[in-house]
Length: 79
Image (cartoon, rainbow, N blue to C red; front, side, top):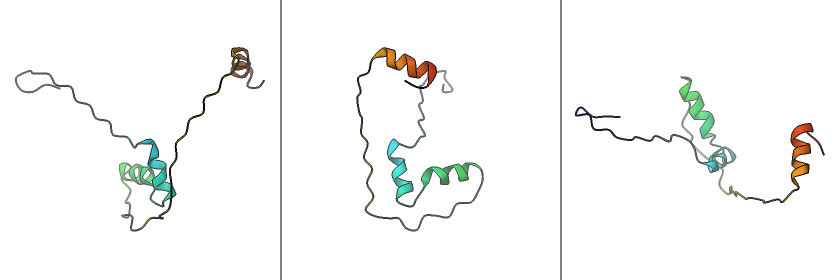
């Protein structure tokens, strides 16, 4: 972007939900669905309640495999 004098500015807009947004659906407030409906011009009632006691846990599992097995499953869909 630039201003009236021609000075350039970098603008970043990152309008996405974080990964834990699925917790909102588990708690009874599916915010991504509400946003999609709003974007399509549909009405959305404000959320009035939610389910307490929900938990979001993210985990990662590293796995070492032989490249031949990976090639087999990539090419043929099975080992």
